[in-house]
Image 1 (cartoon, one colour):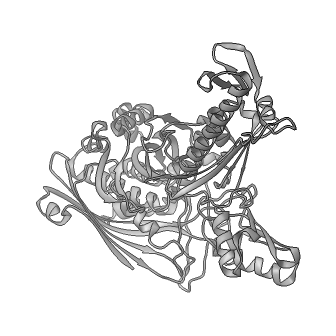
Image 2: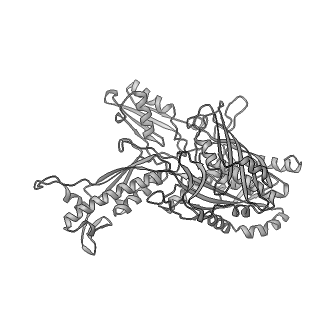
Image 3: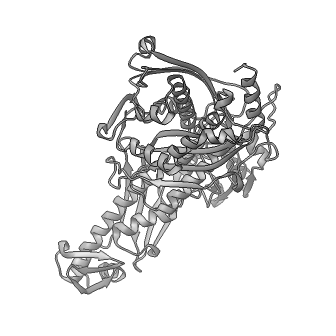
Length: 615
């Protein structure tokens, strides 16, 4: 399968560019490794006429639809529940054969059937990701103004293709990042091999694009004799250009237009935090002492909150408690906190009065699920709208109870009161109970304190960040040590800073794995060689350096809450930032980093190749 993507005329622009750099970059195959592998329990009910499936999945409604199609049943006879899932990262956002076969076995046997995946099976059969080869050309004027970028990319899709061209198209659509590049061509080729199927894993094509672009920029900066930071400064999209139309289409078919942000500010804040200027002053002195340290910069733009919709039901019970039911599905992202905050703020109740139930098809008839950094954007705004409607109903009921105009009613901390008369406050439980029918009720009454919303989004919002890594390389052993790591990011309005920081830090840890340690490798006979944690290395606590996060809030105009997604961002830039930093550290040797992971063996090989003049 192939596709070509064009903005302007890259071929003509490259022909007239004063400086052109050509390179081949490779991104290795690796995958998510959640604490909990995939697992299922299927239980038939009602003489085999109903079915409950407990499934470690990221989209229970999709699994329900697939089972309904296979069985020829109406969907309401199938309940799919995703309990507290121990990590997903996109690995659990594909439909696997077991999710059909285990329920079929349970119905055939008329008894519950359980299946659980062990770690070796996970490495061999759960989806793999990344693995791309890019042949790129980047052209610029002698003063560093970017003119054109051309890319020919090859993607190893494995034996099957469960997500079509989503991942390679994501790579192409995110290639330009925060930079102003008027001419761009990408020719993508997807091939099938006898490897495990290839599908989205945290970042879903974006880490590959960012690695390629940031490596190309650093190689171009060297050819121009410019500092890598200065080259980026000269080509960033400016805040006054927002909304910025890249001339492309996003994967939802809508124009790819950045909605908000300040990329120059993010770059400068990240450089200042890492001490970039001071480090450049000290770098030569460190090298003279045999200490090889380098700094690497990477940036990403991420389309977040893809539709088409997500659903939420919010209601207030007779005790004044609030229940939120959503189609979003948590694998540790903290939906129970963030969605509760949104509902509590919208209605005017204490956070502890809100309960969030998600990932259960019995609670909400339709839903999409959790992937593509979408839950806060789509589910969060659905919860906000549903909770706002419920508040309006409570206000009308409180107005009748307190004999006041609805415009004079306020709700705060779970109490309704006439504005300016705090002594009139009554608990919401009293408001709800007063609205219920009684024997003396003269006719129909409004006692409906519930609202369901399916929130549609016209297109995605664009989160962004700059990552800067400081590394030290032991040239004798090839060991790369991360000394510091800074992230200056924009995810729009921050709902809960602690959860945002947890998302970014977890993503950075996974990105460090991609930059330094993780690789799925096969032998010539197609047998997987890295099927356990003895061979597939993950970063531990000692390999993740101190992280400094800088929150920049540029609310999106595309949804009422101004939210942008943050679930994948932390994992996108680390491989590129680390690769740039390692090349910067080894500049005296003339090393060029063209692929990851940067294991000690690979780093030593790069140094030896450079010393022998074979790079």
